[in-house]
Image (cartoon, rainbow, N blue to C red; front, side, top):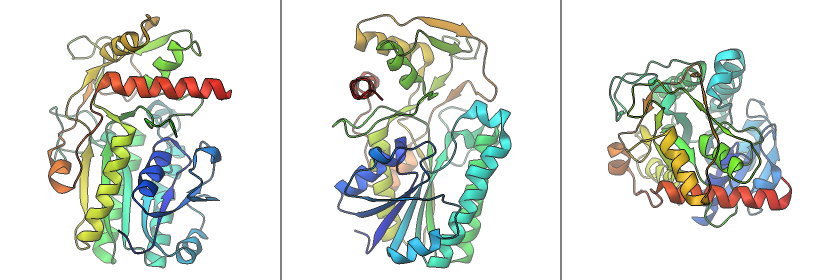
Length: 331
């Protein structure tokens, strides 16, 4: 257990709110910083303290000192790949520049541990699948580049200051807290399973399938879908690793090591809901590779973490239950 408080940036958002739950359930003290531009105050568990602030605000260093923060889990940022292509400056501002300011605050306040929410988009179009951490990182969109630049900053800062870090490269995050405490709540979200369960309960008329001519078995994009609660548990395990080995830093894939195509995901939603969702075939989106699947052997070897929810239908069921809850609450 860490001696002090854990700060979670973006803790009012989708993945961040699940990480807050996992940290609290493990007995950590948690403070959340979120500017609430895309997050929701109601998504933050009341056991944590929420401070409405931007991570780039220089006053973050004061928050770190006041609350005796000993570790930062950094989730805040922008995450939509096509938007990053059309508005790259937003991504370099919200992801790279803001992360630089946050790391600077961490160093100023003497925070020794930092966990970074990175992405499989750092790999670009992979030369092989599954993708290992040592494979080339050649992003094909500004989103992936903005994250890779932050990884480089952390590497350089860790070499110059008493700070160790873990960059967790997410594959496709999906699902919701099985206890119904949190889930993907963003209006207009671009996550496939979120879109599909919205369509299943009538919030959308159809689901767009963007690209049917990829070099994959059925022509649609293949992704490695990881349950958000498993991902949150991986962050807690990564924090334990940083505390136990303060002289080491790590970059680790977060995925299950197998992929499903867009059509296979929609088939799963049809199975779980016992209805057929309308599918509309659309052209490819800018910046989308054909397949992204994790080689997850490194994280399995490095930390005390094993996937507990590696089941596509189960991921869909949890996402669907959360979507129905949002509808009942009028959100």
